[in-house]
Length: 120
Length: 109
Image (cartoon, rainbow over the protein chains, first blue to last red):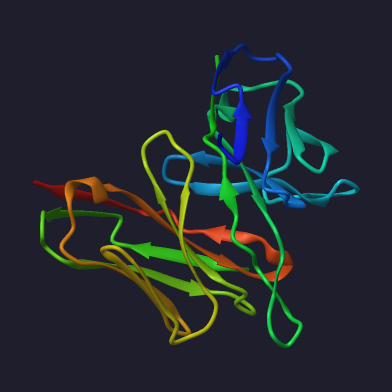
C-alpha cells in the first residue's frame, strides 16, 4: 500500500462550489504539506503543518484553508472554487533530520499521487 | 528569498548518450538539496538528498553532485525508461522546500 494517499484522484466541479481534498499517510511523519502544480510555475506551497496544533500559510494560501485532523490526516479545502484553481494538487509528508552539531536539516518530503482538480 | 533555476528546460537524448542536468540555487543557509523524478500526472518520486558541498550520491544510471552554488544530475547511458521530468529543490529556513521548474528529459530508443 502507498505511504501517502490522496482522495479523490480526479475531480471536476463548478465555480463557487466547496471542495475538500484529503490526504492520509502511514509513514508516521509529523510534518505535512499541500502543494499545487501548474505548467510553467512548478510546485508551489499552499499550507504546511509541523504537528496537529501547528498550521502555517505557504506562498499561495489565499482561497484555501486546511484542517489537520490527526497526525496522519491533512485536508485542503477550497471554500468557493474558481477556475484559476484548476491544477494538480499534491500532499507531502516529512520527518525531521538533525545534523551532528544539533542543527536541523530539511528532511526529505514524500509525495502522494496527486489530485487533478478542474474548476469549470 | 530562496531561488532555484534548472537548465535546460527540456533535453532530448539518444539511448546511451550521457548528459547532465543543472540546478543553480541561492538560499540563505542550505539545509538540503533534493532531486525528484516526476512522471506525467504522478507525484514526485524522491531520488537524492545532498546536504553539503562536495557530496555525491549514485543510484543506477544517476549521480547527483553538489557545490556551493549548484547541483548536477548526471545521467550515464540513459534508457527510454529514464524519460521523465527531473525536479530540483532546496531546503531553507523553516525546513520548507523551494522547487525549480524542472527539466523534461526524453530518451529516444
